[in-house]
Image (cartoon, rainbow, N blue to C red; front, side, top):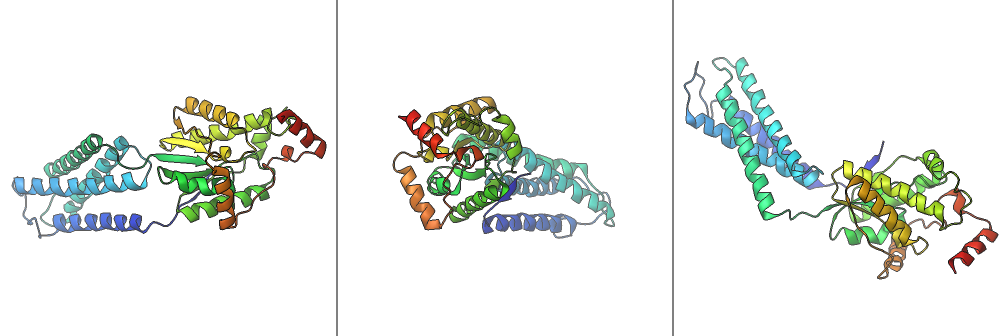
Amino acid sequence: MHKIYKPFNPLKWIHLLIIASALLLIAVLLLTPLVTTYEPNPPFTWRDKIIHLILFGWLARLIAGWLKRYTALNYKKIIIWAIVVATSYSWLLEKIQNFIPGRTDSWEDLLAGLLGASLVAAIWYTYKQFRGDKTQPKLLLHMCCGPCGSHLSGQLAKTYDVTLFFHNPNLDSLLEFERRSAEAIKVAKYWGLPAIISDYQHRGWKQKIKGLEQEPEGGARCAVCFAIRLMATAKFAKENSFDAFTTSLSVSPHKKYNYVLVAGQAAAKKYKITFIEQDFKKKDGYKLSIMQAKKLGLYRQDYCGCEFSTLPEKKVKTIKKIKK
C-alpha cells in the first residue's frame, strides 16, 4: 500500500459543499410543492420535464467540474461518472416520491433527468475538446531524495501538475527509507504538492540485482537499479492517468545520465506513457538543489542508499580510475 500526502486545499471542500447544496436544493424543489403540486396521477407536462432536464444537467456539470479539477480521471470517465451520479440521484428522488401521499415515481421525469445530465455532459465534453485542455499536464516525478527534488519540484510545477513519487527500494534500511521519505514530504509541503510514498521493498530489490553486488558504484548495478525504480514509476503513472513521468535522479552529478535516460525510455515504451527526457543537473540544477536543500534544512545523505555503495577505500580508487 502506498502512503499518500495531499496538501490541504480549501477550494476542494468549498466545491464539494456547493455540490451538496445543489443536491439539497434539487430535493427541495422536486419533493415539495415549491415547484410541483401533489395530485394523484398528474398529467404529463413539459414544464416538469424541462425542470428535471435543467436541474440534473446542472448537477452533472458541477460533478464533472469537480472530477476534472481534483482527480486524475480522463474526460470520458468524467462524463460517465457525472451522468451516472446525476441519474442515480434522479432515480433516488423518484423512488422517494412513492412514500409521499398522493405522489408516485415517474419514468418520464427520470428519463428527462437522464437526458439533461447526458446532454450537458456531452456539451461540456465537446466544448473542452474544441477549446483545448488549458489545464497543466499531470506529471509524476520520481523523487530519489529530498535534496535532489527540492528545487526541481518547484520548477516543474510551473509547467505541470506535479505529484511526487518516492519509490526507492534500494535504501539499505527501513530507518534510512523513513528518513529520506520524510524529507520528500517536507519538500512536498513547501511547494504545496501531493506526494506518494511507496512501500519499503528492499528484499525484492536485492533479488533483482543479485549477481551485481560487487559491481563498482556507477556500474551495471546502478543501471539495473534505475530501471527498477523507473519501471515502477511508469507503471504507477499509467495506472493512475498521469500524462507523463520523470525523475530527479539526473540532478546529481554522481549519477550517469545515460543510465537514467535508457531506463526512462524503456519504462515509457513498456507502459506507453511519456518520459520527460532532461538532464536536470544542467543550467545549475545541481547547485540550485543544494541551495534549496540548505534553505529547507534537509537531510543531505553522503551515499546513494544501498549497502553496496558504501565501498572500502580501495574500491573507491578503482572507480576513479574507471571514470578517467
